[in-house]
Length: 439
Image (cartoon, rainbow, N blue to C red):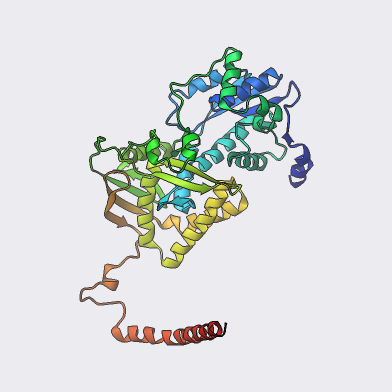
């Protein structure tokens, strides 16, 4: 396999449309860009096989209709791939591992889009293999993160894979470099693309969350109020009535298994319920400034009500079980894993190593129940914590008169042991003061 990867690397990326008659697997969302790409390639004589990943997109009313749209725009065959269960499980796994590194204003971004890309590309590549297709296309641009994610996941799954990305083809870009040009192209060929209204930003969503970015949101002076949420209520509007609600989530071996004592057939159903509950309160709505893979900054507004709800409860149990040194490893290694997820390395050896360690030695001990009172937005209170493997012992450090784990004499001894370290520190600080006074 090592030789296979390097034997094709010089010709792996097509800078112009391949010859007529070849088969290309196109990741087809049904949006303007993939409609234009499918029609463009079909008119060049390409056999387009369209693959749509059903990720439980909350803004997509009829997933089954997307395959018909692909066929109408020149695809020879179209497939709808159900990815919801794997997506939900990978989302739970990312919570278990703490794989979140982007945080602005004290709120986390739960990497919902990177997880969705990992799941979708994996499913599409498996389907392409069944159809004997070794050329992969998608609608990602050279300015974004997805172009690298698709490339890495693709080669990892198929060492002989080649890529044709319309947004790397000068002919395609020069003739259809923007939404207006693509719309005119489709209209010219009798396939007009209409939306009910042209939004002031673009949206990408899946079962785990929604990402809103681009256009007006590129101006960081624009507030979160610009976004019309699709998974949450607009909790900042005073006229929106939100009733207090108590919710209990139960975990077993680091994974959520029940909500309000209700069991679920699968991970996707549990995630859907968590979204409904968190969404009623506007939980997990955040405004983020992130550094993309190429280290250029971008801004986005993110929704992840279910992920936020599960994470709050998981984190509560985590802190009642593990020591500070183990929590440090969870946060440090989880942050490292988050970088790998973000850049498209979720299934590579380093990520697998980190996931195995974090799940086995930290996550697997997280068992119990946490109850929250949800109010408005991220306003909530933890009501109860029932933890099976808790190392929290109230009597150990109680302010009341109890039989303590150690005596005052032992505490004096531990304090006196600090004298050596403090003497060393004072010596070095004095040397530092003397050096500064000379300069």
